[in-house]
Length: 322
Image (tube, rainbow, N blue to C red; front, side, top):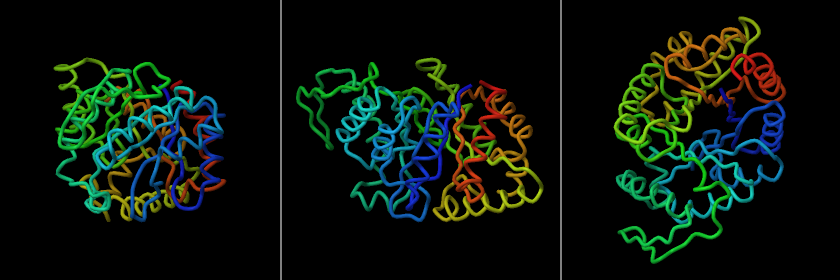
């Protein structure tokens, strides 16, 4: 089992991002991930590709991932070329996590119709593959025209970086099985929602191309030392989801049931090290998870306390699975 991390991001805490990324590399994490949002009060950067390009220069081994890049907001060529170049400068370390996006305000800001999300993804992902493979591409649609176009430079990884795709409804999950290398569920869905989506995903895999490159999952993780820290962690996670997903109208978050889901372990991995180990084992046994990305973006995981928690996770939890 491999482990990635989604550290604190957004705002003016760039130095903390660099410190946590370097620490994660030293501790043996396989990857670091950054997401994308625009015009919202949420701990994300607006351009994960720029963030990863900067981090490529101060790291040497850790893989660099987007979680997720809101692909329909961007031009196909912009994503194809930026991803290829980032893969070159990072010496083949990019994982391109893609998603459809859901905030109407973001589509309005980019001048893109939200109703075109699916069409842009269905058209764009196969074209990314062809361009990264070095093929001469001719393609015309309402959105773009390519006439014997070749990408230069090509990605460092043969055929381009892996594409991981996230989503929580039937069509996006089936799209992940058809077009992506892996289905990448984020932290917003509870265990029952994950169960439903994995049934859809596995059925779609059987009808399509077979096994994915891996089975990743992102979850909020907080290691606590006593009952007082547990209470603070629960309060912090409630605020994170209430001020983020719930305020944005995300379909997966019901604050009336959130706290009970949290205490059952249906939302996040929260507890002392042994409890978190048991929770991860449970998800691995049910879903076949072999790649866990831990998100450490709540108030309990900031600053020095957050770095101590990351070290403790690497020292006490990761050896049980690596």
